[in-house]
Length: 348
View: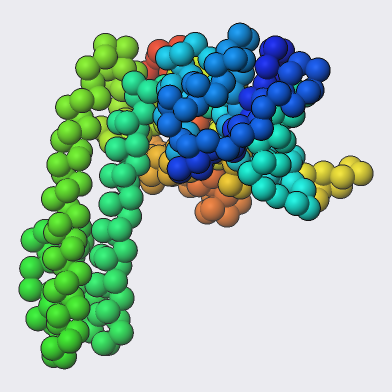
């Protein structure tokens, strides 16, 4: 995480909401030139900042509706900075809070060089990345339903289905295990929703695979990621689209921190005071690496490596160490455009 330190003639802090946005524009000397609440409309925004367009920077705290404003500023040639929401909360906390106060704080943070930056993901790849995230949401919902089917068998003291329920053929007739009519109806509704989710997930995967590999550079990077044992189309696409450009990370340490593969320590007076920052980083990238490790350990060589790691500590510690090592490997693979090197990876 870095801070935006560039100097400008005008600094615009925007407290952005779904329907309204509160603007505060400061001069380089810190004088408040404008403080106004307007509608979230491109024309209204451009009309309001028109007198200050010369060397203007706009700062917005990261929330779900920032896309349109970032794209508008890029098209209009206005400098735009996205603020990291978690870091922002610790910096501009105050007893009183309102849209007017928040917009002023954002402008002051911009002017003082203390505006914590978040990555502004480019418009051309953003929608497909969001579609991958939506697919993952559906997969998790389907997983909850599958788990509920298993749990209901235990509730009624029935033997759990012995076969993997993710396969359609293994779900046929499961409701017949129950004598109670209401329980049968509950299982039927679960199975119906599982089927609907499965069909939609298949359609999304087909659409994503079809539209993601048009760019030759991305095709090359995807083929490199697929050389990792167990990593297929969806995991490679998730990694690539969540990372976007590996060159935006100065080192593999920065990349692993972004992917939530490390746990930073907090120290005071030379003593460890716990760890923090668990929610800072990319949760989707964390999921992708966790899945990749789980799939890799099915491979015989990876399994032996995992056992060696467990000999040094717990299973959870071995899993996180494996994921961290994989994160370092992926960073160098994408940076150097080289395929996965098993001998080098498992030698350490």
